[in-house]
Image 1 (spheres, rainbow, N blue to C red):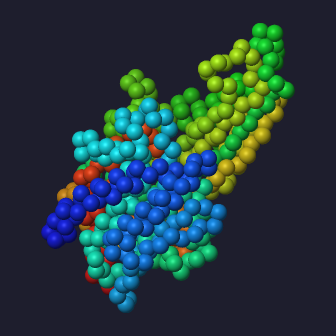
Image 2 (cartoon, rainbow, N blue to C red):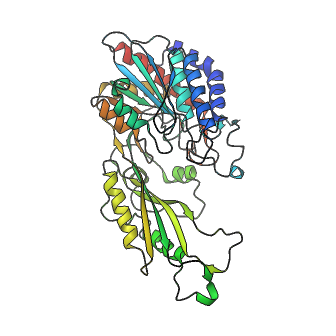
Image 3 (tube, rainbow, N blue to C red):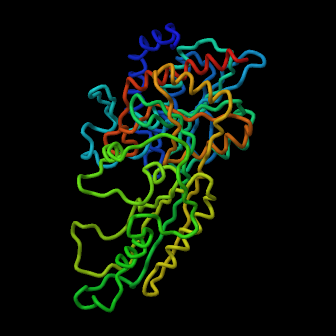
Length: 446
């Protein structure tokens, strides 16, 4: 059973944890181009304040060339004790249309034990989780390093900084709090992450818009051509149709029910799921492809004219272990080959974030499973994640022998990247306790 002194202390600390999380959620720290930079800097400063208030006196901002600051801190440990690196990020996805939210995205609200707001789960819950664990464990034999990123959701520059300054980030164990459990009460260690690549495709057919009645028929419409190219990305069952991509069955454990997945994803009644294989196959170890943005004439005020140019951003999730640059090339070649009618096509490569597969046989992993079993009083699932955390491979590069543990307070109902994002406050409390116990146990192993 969890040590009572930690459990009781964390329970007493939860009002402060909630207040810290609400403070961060109120800051619209979206690091995407086109968004105001001031809130991102405000969030970085707030995170540094929280770490200092947790007893980490040297918490400071790192100037990341070309990007937003990261927050860094160190807690010295005993000689020969392991070094643990704690990771999370304070930047968030754009909120989208406020009308899609039950409550305003940057005004935290608690309903039925869940705190709602953009970033409440992904990943400001991870930030306060690390701070609370350090506050609950003021003395540890471990040397602890903390890195809180400000650009995880967009074009991150932190990886280059880590490679250039490896001594700041070397560790025996890396703990990322940018993940979560399959569902509330089902403790989960994330052992694999899909990679992600993207490209922008632009189609041109005409010098300018022309009357659809006078020229429609023989003259090609760019939006129709682009739509046909997009439609070719899947077969009739919804499987990705790009030749040459790695696509495997998931063998890492964990379970996902169709009903639970449909509920978490908000799939409408009567709408089929797409693709073949188990839910875990399709979500964790097979590729998926989506159009995440499109430029074309808006619906409101649409003219009765052929569209001369249209473009889209296509995002491809790549199976763990697949080469992301090769996968991006295959995506671009597929789109180009699918272009009909000799239309002019320009394809611009976007970012490429590799997938990740964790080592799961070491002593730190065993400790992580043990503390999760103690806290949740049930077996631990080993699951995957459909998303990407590009820095995990960078951390493995600078610390080749490190064990990397990915967990957190998110859950299947958290709606990350979507309206009504939320975190279960009880789950956050349990994960703070688990991290505190893990740090304590790793220190006692020295």
